[in-house]
Image 1 (cartoon, helix red, strand yellow):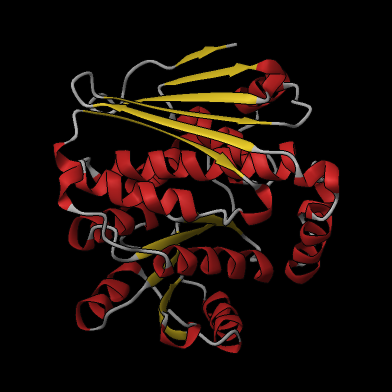
Image 2 (tube, rainbow, N blue to C red; image 1 turned 180 degrees about the horizontal axis):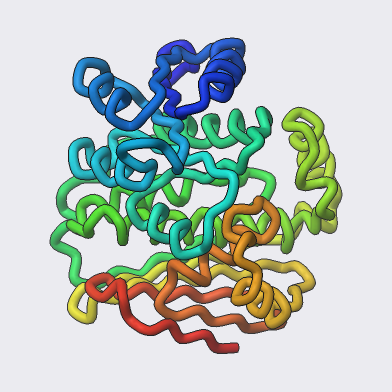
Length: 311
């Protein structure tokens, strides 16, 4: 789907934010409509088809989280939703992710970050394909991948599993949580374990970042590294297990776990958000091999089970 065909609804009670964000999106080639509260936005959605809604959380009338819940109830996953916030605690953030929010953007809006987020959503749509209804009859399956980082498309694997999860008749919130974990596990293995990027390198402008990644992948020591990804599904026990291992140097996961538990802003910051998402969305989280291997277990029928963290 090209940007010209991608239609976005921007919702915020601040006229200046709506106007400035709309201008950024229009310059980038997107079709944009505007609304200044959740009720107005809902009326517009009843008469027009949108691919994406970008909504503030704190609005008069219906809140951003309530608006997200209505979208999911009415449209399922057909409409992507990005939420904007000045500050939100982790419980609110996790609830939004479980309702199916595609991303969180912190105010003041970073134009590059929101364009990256939209490009991610479009990439997922582009790669969609039907895997067949036979998946709904699987009782058990196990698959393993050895990924060459030189040919890694960040979302290709999660797209494969998006259709698998669809045909396994999982509810939207659990399927969304699993796909987020897959994305973050593989992306972290690629950025940290394979490339070993420093913080300032990860926040470079998009073109410069891609050039840096391409250059690093030409280095023999990096090109020979591999990412090992394994998924197993036990329908009888209602368990899904994800494992990712990289050839990097590992990291101090205990320090990160401590920070995740104590830093209430970490979940919506780009730096460290992947680990925070895995921690909050998994039922069991296990680190081994000095942090090079991460295992996530999801109970498909008990989203409120107590979390187990081991290493």
